[in-house]
Structures are given as structure tokens and as C-alpha cells.
Length: 145
Image (tube, rainbow, N blue to C red; front, side, top):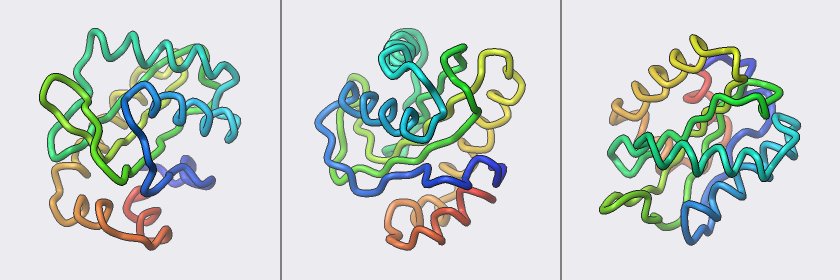
């Protein structure tokens, strides 16, 4: 991932979340706080709509909710690690969430970031570090690579 996206604290570790909707609220609040978006409710609605039509669970207790929207001011990637897994889809439990927020006009960028994040999730060593590390510099290093 490009380091320009990770200059701010774009990750939250060991969150207590009860369900996907609550997570979307936290994501929107964090994105607003970081000035990535202006419209929290609009972003939440975008996530809900996306989840209706596109599966974002990718295995290994990981999900990549991603939105390309006019509500996004700045392309960014956020990482969230939950204390306990939450139900994501029928049988899937998610504990590690990579969020891709992309401006509406940046379709190619959006696709490229989906590929990069997917590769990280498939790399067992990288995923183990993201699952367990408490070292924010180590996590940032992995997310930047």
C-alpha cells in the first residue's frame, strides 16, 4: 500500500464491536475524524448497499469492505482488529477488517488497492503479524509495504 495513505493513524486495534452495522458506524466516525469524508451517514449507507450486492468476506476471518463514492474526499485504507469476531455473512465470522475508501472517479486505484490488500491477507506470515502484533510501527510497516 502506498505510504501516503498511512501518514495518519488509520487503524484501530482490539475493538469491542457487536455487529457489522456498529463497525460501519465506527469506520464512518474514524473517517470523519481524519477528514477522509464529510458525510458519516452517507458512508454507512454506502457500506450497507455494497454489502447487499457484493461479498466482502475473503476468508481467514478477514473482510475488505470497500466503497467508491462521491462522499469520499481522500482515498484511504483503514485497518480494524476486533477483540472477538462478528457475524459478517451467513456463516462467516470476521475479526480483521481492511477498509478501502476511494473517490468515485478513481476506479483503477480502487481495483489496485483491492488486489494489494487481498495479497496481504493470503500471506500467512503477514496476516499472523496483523492478527497478533501490539506494535503500531510494525503494523504500519506491513500496511505500507
